[in-house]
Length: 452
Image (cartoon, rainbow, N blue to C red; front, top):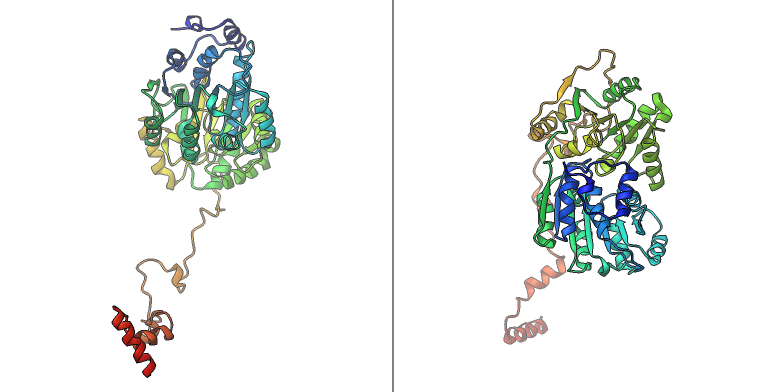
């Protein structure tokens, strides 16, 4: 197998790799290095957790020479603020023995401080599309100096609605540049973006999105409702040796807060939660505490499903079954990273059976179903989304389809069927004077009006 010694890299980069303890490159890193180094446009398709950040950053750092230029030469676009912070930290690790300046910019923070940092000069900018576009519009950032563009997790960006910013950023960039794109899935939208802005890109693929990770054990439980799912997690998390670092994915922010409150009663400071309604400092602090082991359980929405490199996660819990099966793959990719073993647990209700079957069809794998422990209390309490809607029989606005309206309803009277014809005065004038078609008609109408 090809090792880092086979790569033509500088001494500072080699020293950084040794200091980080990397022995052998991953498949995506081995295949990407010569393509990126060649200067050709590239599209990389690989599962989450395969080392994509290092795959594009190693050759870029190799090509990036020392410069006193203020304006950046490399632009890296990522979908979330957390991923900006992570990529910046990774670049600093890789370039610890080289004079490379890197800056991260994202929303939710003071833009004036970011303008000042850009004015001081940088070589690499890592950014979310929205904040980068704002900085470019106010001319705090000059994009014409960019030689290399990297778009990481592009399918997530398009799902989050960044198409407008992406296309406008492309128009602001110089035509002569190298484009590098990484994605876990190749969707139709991604393909259109490639066709519009890439020039004869070389495609590097190491795995399809539906391929299950061999080192992840997958199980599932059939559970009737939300609070029974919460009771099951409270039961499972009692074993701290097995469930020592758990990431719990919930479909929306309200349910994430609701589950956090339930778990907090039993596990208190061991639990934390993040989603897009939390402040940036709160989100970063929760990620840091979870990564360092201060918190054992992290409840989150899909904002955490892609890109973030959290070490030694023992279990990923899918509290809700994802509607899109690819999201399931991205979620469970948080565990079993760097060839370690991992575990995935899927909880599904009767309504989520179809979504579970789509996941199994994508992976071509049947997920093992465990029996619900007898000690688990089946909750009678329901969430607002689970509560059946009450339809009032005599309320016409809530009448079910096909229900007989009854004798109390009848057709409108003839006088109530009248339509607005523009007022009585206009109708009288229209009757009195026909529409003039010629000058003669106008004179005729004028003479008749005087006689009347």
